[in-house]
Amino acid sequence: MKSLLTACFLLVTTFVFAQSADEKAVMAAEKQRFEAQVAKNYDVLNKVLADDLIYTHSNGNQDTKQSYIQSIKDGKSKYDAIDVQEMKVRVYGNTAIINGVCLIKAANNGETINTRLRYTDVYVKKGNQWQMAAWQSLRLQN
Image (cartoon, rainbow, N blue to C red; front, side, top):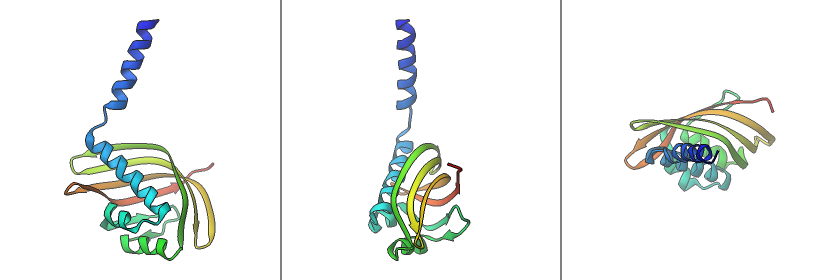
């Protein structure tokens, strides 16, 4: 029994620590972006969002980097909390794809939103910085 538990521990430990440095960097950039949305940290958003960003909301509306940041500045999009429930990162050279689920507590054009989203986003590595180039989400039934 003890050897079975040791084997399970080694398997889990290997899986947890098997993430590449790029996978960890992309996850960190994603976490930083979510925190910046809530904190209205425009410097961080400018750093982690690609200039050619296409941000497709769960309602089908699209934003560019400029219009997305402006919607946060204007208070049209106000994020109170973003809780990541699932996140899987796959890296292909200088491109990374994230599939995840998050709980968003926000206000959009004055309407309170408390919803779970399944999302896919794409990060590209520019120099040493991972930047989000695309986001698309859909609402999940609670």
